[in-house]
Length: 134
Image (cartoon, rainbow, N blue to C red; front, side, top):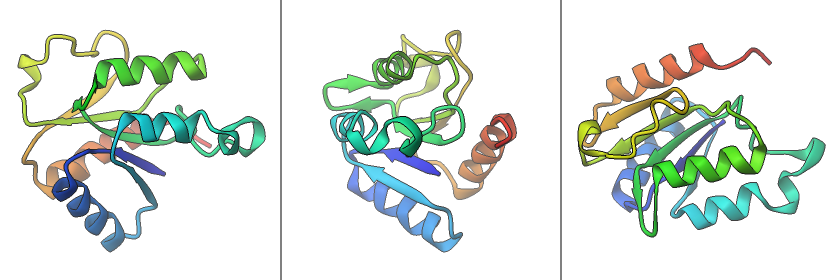
């Protein structure tokens, strides 16, 4: 499953249309708060856990209102008490301009907006090749 946290409706709609066209299961959230509520909610606990940090893929807009990608991923890692998280950060800011880039904390990909579908596909393939086997 691919989870997308993106507050720009145009980008989110484009990704929704793309994932639908390739039959890729995905779920979208407009804010970090929405995603927090989802992964910490009662339907995401124990054996009924929907979001699996070591298996699922997150596509996160690095600069969300009120929180950045580093803060969001840190909260997810702490909540699930894991160091395994599969992330593609997307941003209109260059990777070099992001001071708190999380590269040293865990492996993540980065796409500069606007990115092509080919770049997105390549990044998803890279991430999936790193995912543990089910």
